[in-house]
Length: 204
Image 1 (cartoon, rainbow, N blue to C red):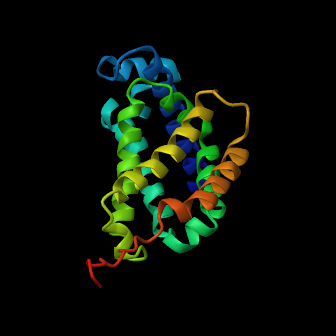
Image 2 (image 1 turned 45 degrees about the vertical axis):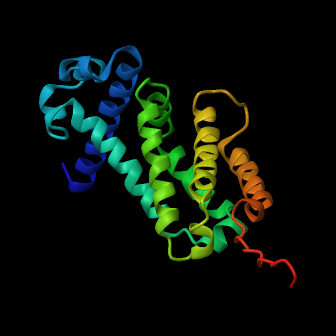
């Protein structure tokens, strides 16, 4: 078997394992899922599983780490002024990534444990904004900056989550266009620099 064929076989095996894992996550608690459950559902042998993962937790950790790393990669392309003026290009990159393995993400989003992971993703976005040198200090030091950052992070994540859960008939692309319009129309209000009005003393 050539290297290219081995590579394709490896990708296929991982997809089968991840898909089986996602289905099982909807049926039982994570700590009750066993390797036997996964290989039975995926119709593979135990050796194939251990060629890719050490245990069931490694499956979940790899999926989460891949998503986090990809989101960080997107955020490294994030520039405060560009994003809030034209957010659609970056949003569409996220869409292409999600659509590439749509089935497994849909399965995982519909599990009970997904809320904790989504909170982690939102926190990463907020932390990135707090440390981004492109955002003026006068904005970041505003008392309500963190609230506003959470508003944007939560709103974006919740709309994509609604799509994965089947709560909307619109496509991910259409949802991204709507999100882009909302960001453009509201960013000036939510992230405007605070101006400190001069104090006028009595008698001046």
